[in-house]
Image 1: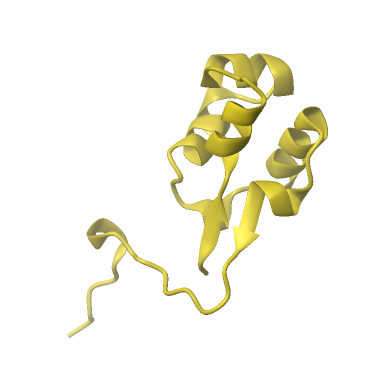
Image 2 (image 1 turned 90 degrees about the horizontal axis):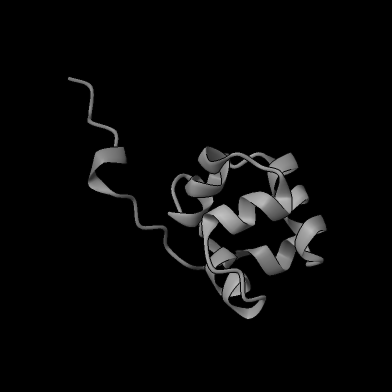
Length: 85
């Protein structure tokens, strides 16, 4: 799915300087936040995690994560499935 993660933009607008500061604000673990910060495997992000971020930063889920219809997803080489012979 072509999803756009806007966490860094939102953090900049709200003057949140680091993942550590975001941890303090949200109460979420560094591991959970780093996955979003690094834009890793966004499709498997837990809805509960996203909702906590939205609640604490007073934003809508659609502000945090956007679905871009018609956009092609770029899959990193390490995530591509190899054909079965």
